[in-house]
Amino acid sequence: MTDFEPLSDVELDELDEFLYAQMDAGHQSMLLGAAHGFFTAELCGPLPMPFAEAIDIVLGEAEFATPRQEKRMRALLGRLWLEVEAQLDAGEDFEPLLHQAENEDGTTVTLYADWCLGFLDAVENSEAWQEHLSAETPSDEPERSAPL
Image (cartoon, rainbow, N blue to C red; front, side, top):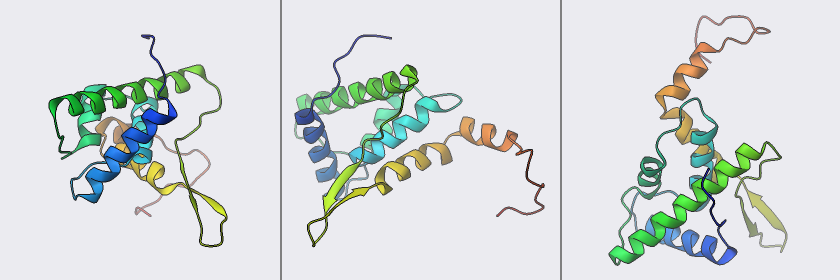
């Protein structure tokens, strides 16, 4: 694996703000948490797609102010991909990239939905994942005649 520098908090914020602005403007792109979940599913799946293709899916219909901005966002997403890959390869506890928000009463809550939706999006839209999952038959559960 190539050496890389993990994203700083400032870079994560920059990427988060860009992706949020794209979604807010109605451009079909993923939010940062969903992108992290999507990359995670791809990298831990049976046959990961090429990372450039995964970045294209995350960006979706994003619009860039300049070619330089496009290169910057793609570079940040590429480093995020490498970060996820390194975390998974390390075989240690995996930390999903989750957002926290403050409730009206001032308590902090962790938002899991974006990350989970990104992960599920990758699994549901991957032929390799679907083949892998359909090949698995739980040994302790009876066969079902109809899907749940």
